[in-house]
Amino acid sequence: MPTAARLVAALALAALAFVVSGQIMPLMPENTDFGYFTHVNMALAAVVGWKIIGPRAGRGFVPGVNNGLTGMAVLVLLALFLQGAVEMFRLAHRHVYDDPFEALAAIFTIGLEYFFIMAVPTVLITLVIGGAVVGVIVDVSAKRWK
Image (cartoon, rainbow, N blue to C red; front, side):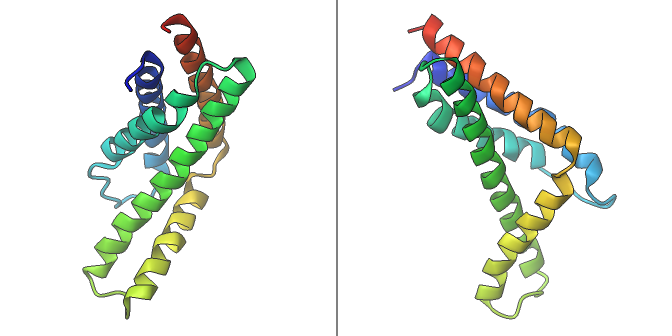
């Protein structure tokens, strides 16, 4: 059922994904083609906000912060998996992998490589503070528009 908290969670987490995607782009190699990188991350963030953060809103300040941090962590894990899968398919079209299991294992390897690229203090601080702020905003909106 649509609620104001779900809408606010989707929009706030999408805004956080937009900011963090902009911070990650300069960290990648110079010849990287980003394509729909930011758009995909924002859409994924909207879904995570709607499905995970929104329904758990309105329980108080500390649970709100925890809710935002949980949603941010789920978003990062799903985005790393999705971006790793996209890169694996790009490499699979070049016949890099010998069998399907090697290609499936490469999704996690590529995702882990992307995590180490994005694991710089500015990005991590933005994610933690942004996740907490999103949780508080969603909690306040759930209490205000019941």
